[in-house]
Image 1 (cartoon, rainbow, N blue to C red):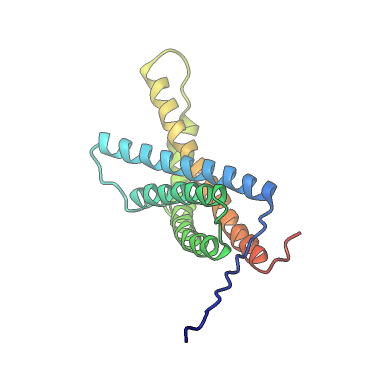
Image 2 (tube, rainbow, N blue to C red):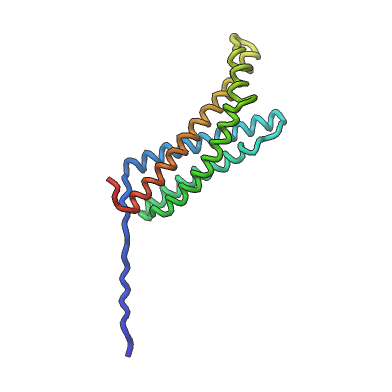
Length: 180
């Protein structure tokens, strides 16, 4: 006698808040791509100057690339209606640790106690501004650009770190089905 086995397949659908998810994806993609581009530029400058490249430049290139890849994975999973909160929480946590580590290191370099980037920019760039049509003005503009890139990178790192924390909270709320 053959027994009939009945398999019941239950599909759980998660309801993500569309507006917040899209806003998060946009800002995080822009932030990660900007961080990636700025630190790749810094590595290029260091190579051109034939000086050593600090470990946190390639670290940020890799972390920014992972951030962009994470956004692309979320977009793919969302379009195929397979975005699971557990995957988002795990990816967000891993990236949160990486972003927080880099943010702390970059904060120390930017505003550290001795010889910080901000002090050097103030002393050697902003206090010695140049104007007119000369090679000195071009050098000043490039140096000012590098100083501003440091501040922009730090700002985007801070925003992305906070957004990763927000994504972990949002994914938890979606998992619990109590997101309004």
